[in-house]
Image (tube, helix red, strand yellow):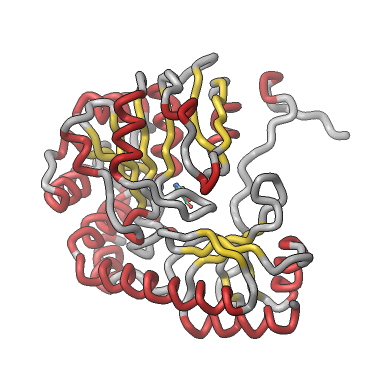
Length: 350
Ligand SMILES: Cc1ncc(COP(=O)(O)O)c(C=O)c1O
């Protein structure tokens, strides 16, 4: 066994493992990391090209001022209610820096986004893990957990479950610390809880442009909340956590609402189609409000075996092997052509 140079508090540390990212240009049907099946807005591409010039020798705006202003305008907020990050993941990490240090509890309900567990280790925070109840519901213990930092992933990944306003308000009313609602997938769901930031000073909403804006490669996330929470994030973030190209891309993306709607409508309609097709093939599915479906192959077919056999056919999906979701697959919504290839491959396998 080779020597580990990691600090001793990270003995046995298991990093977050992102989904496989094969080289561009190979003929993969990539349905494993919840990227957009449609390309970004042409206006975004034009803005990036225009910004890729001589000014790159200069640092970007440290607080991503143009993006902050454009996002604030879009949501009817003040710039002081918006923070930007290098993807939603960066902002999740910044929440740990700001709100939960060594020994502090960080509450979340499982199964959920697998990044939270390694972040607890990195920050030496104490994970307060609450398995969900029947139908992936939040338990009273979770709702009432007094942790200084609590995460709600809504809609959740990988289950796709969306909790409505009353459930989220219930958590907010019973929590004592900061409640971060990670709305990475909310554009594909019936509603957002964004307007609750008006009455709940402890609420932070996290969004990403990786899904419904087709910009996973640009790494753009944003947080919305009351100015004191946003100031706390700004105080601990990296100085230049948004580069110049990401800033112009964020502005162009938020201003092209028609393109954003086109992506969302496409994904929501393909999701219904794919769910119906998989149900017909005997797959169990969990109702999804996200840009993926969460399904279990028919009895006696192992999800790992299905994922491996799909991979041999150049189709990538995510599978889970830890209870309570052992045997389940998360399949990103793709184009109709990608879905046809997935279904043909499944026909051969099952
Ligand atoms: C639940 C959840 N939150 C946040 C993110 C962050 O996305 P990004 O860092 O690409 O903005 C993801 C990405 O898949 C996610 O699944």
